[in-house]
Amino acid sequence: MPAGPRGVETPLNGFPAISSFAGMDFDKNQDFKNQGLRKSEVTSVKVESLTLKVLSPDDQDLTFLDSVEFFARAGDREARIASRQNVATVDLRLPNPVLSLNVENVELQPFVAAPTMSIIVRGRGRLPEREVRLQAVVKLQVETGLL
Image (cartoon, rainbow, N blue to C red):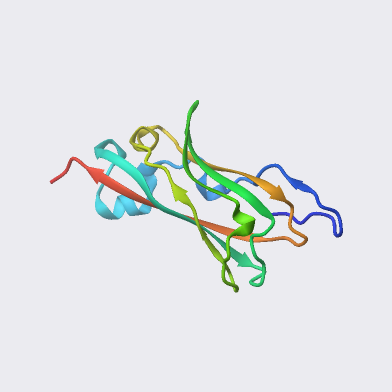
């Protein structure tokens, strides 16, 4: 997350893209390969959990965020998978606070089965006074038709 100018409250109107969440092909996913799975065998995929962690600086909180939303996108199809409102008011422990988002009960199998899927982030708030590195972790519950 880029820093805003010191002493000036600059609105945060969007999140930078997370490159590891762009253009994912689950047939090339290492976890799928380790299990011998192909995305065509998947019958259900749902988000189990989604967290946002401050990596650096370790004493940075998330009070610069008002809201954050994560969306799955494949082609022209999009669905919200997790969100959190009033982030600035959540009491998170330093160092390296972790925010748990509220996950949606949305079926992601059509997204996973697509040629590629991306996860995009939208948020509102203010740019932080210093650059902040964030880590997003998405855990999926995957079911297959295999016995």
